[in-house]
Length: 181
Image (cartoon, rainbow, N blue to C red):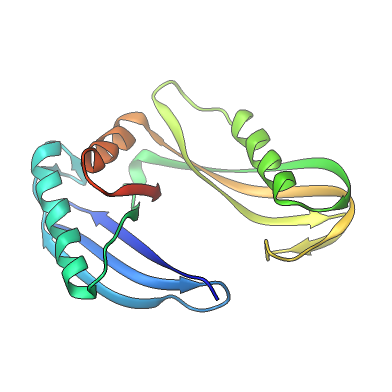
């Protein structure tokens, strides 16, 4: 069974915490370790000085890598709730056959293109809640369903562009890549 690291970072006014776990399909995440350092360059939950914040951000990740004795590349970052809005959308399409990953990607692309986003916002994540083929509901994206009509229900996470840009700057010039929010 394929296993992969999941690393989550939370950047707050007082502390930056990083946690890492080992995940595999159908199993609970096994927590490998965590790290916490005093925050710098953050006020009221928002990054005010990217360089100072980056210093603490990298320290938290370095400490975590030392703790778990593994190299981390992909990370997930928690977003401040006051800068996020959540929308739920559905997309229906005719498939006449087996649901493929391409059908699901097309549905997500349609939802993305049809989500209203203000000029100062951007979509930072979209995830499927469930899908239905004809009248059969599935919560398991690995399940193979066959039918005529596909309905995909997804949650769209929208955040202020400035917030996302600050998080991207934390990773600029490092080996870390933001996998999601």
